[in-house]
Amino acid sequence: MGALQGRVALVTGSSRGIGAAIATAFANEGAAVAVHGRDVEAINHIVASIRWEGGRVIPVTGDINRWADIESMRCRIERELGPVDLLVANAGGSPTPPCLLEDITEVGWRAAIDTNLTGTFLTLKSFLPRMKELQRGTIITISSAAARRPHAKSPIAYSAAKSGIQMLTQHLAAQAGPFGIRVNGIAPETILTERNAERIPDAVQTMLIGEHPVRRLGTPEDVANAALFLASEASGWMSGVILDVAGGAVMT
Ligand SMILES: NC(=O)c1ccc[n+]([C@@H]2O[C@H](COP(=O)([O-])OP(=O)(O)OC[C@H]3O[C@@H](n4cnc5c(N)ncnc54)[C@H](OP(=O)(O)O)[C@@H]3O)[C@@H](O)[C@H]2O)c1
Image 1 (cartoon, rainbow, N blue to C red):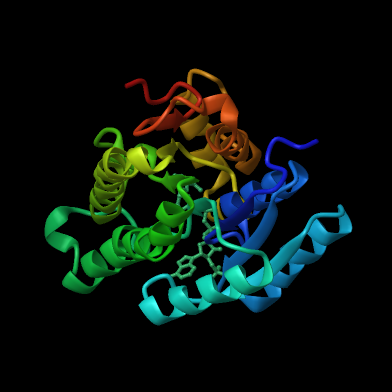
Image 2 (cartoon, rainbow, N blue to C red):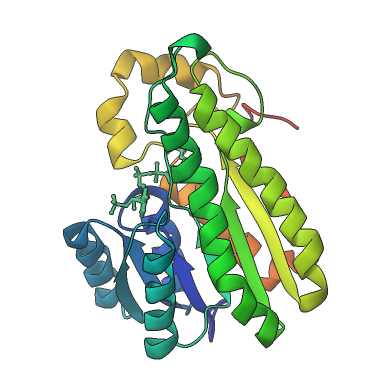
């Protein structure tokens, strides 16, 4: 029997990249999984691949910055799979490249905060009450190595948003623990997703590898393995932890 048999999981932003690897790993361990994003074709691709492997999965769409979208996707998951007791608030990313603080536009700043911090907050706010009713649940948020220390290659607004996610995670861990809910975060360093593999030139990848004591960049599966650990009872006495999945590049 899989480690997540009987669980109902939502992984936001699982139409590709890290989220897709987490959704796939959870389904392989027996969880019923909702695959989420905005790109219907990409979502359907991941759903088909999980179904092909025998997993129980449904597609859901919505913008994590829109409360109504999140609520309607929660209702659909509850109707089709049951109440979510395993939530990974993974959707996010940096909408702007790194630059000097004085060159950050107000629009760019707000976009980074909305996409990461506000989107994570709205997601947690929607799914938490049902977990409290059930008196059980596991929540995983996704921060970034960019929030673990200042680095010239990290966009400042994105780093600040991801730092906010860490404090949000720890506050919620303290509030929700007595309801049988564990809340932890993962802070990945550079992960070679499809998008990063296309976007980061080979020479920069080589330079980045040199910054990691474990001499390679991360894979989506590296993060999925950490999520699997935090989702399962193997981490049953861990809450409020931010786990660095960083090839040794971040040591806190
Ligand atoms: N890759 C890295 O090196 C790295 C390192 C540290 C932290 N992270 C964090 O890990 C998470 C996943 O990153 P990734 O690299 O796998 O990203 P990705 O490949 O760009 O995928 C991002 C996912 O988030 C979804 N998403 C983004 N904004 C959304 C919104 N407003 N509403 C709904 N869905 C939204 C996307 O959906 P659609 O594409 O379907 O619209 C997609 O499924 C992010 O939070 C990111 O900040 C990544």
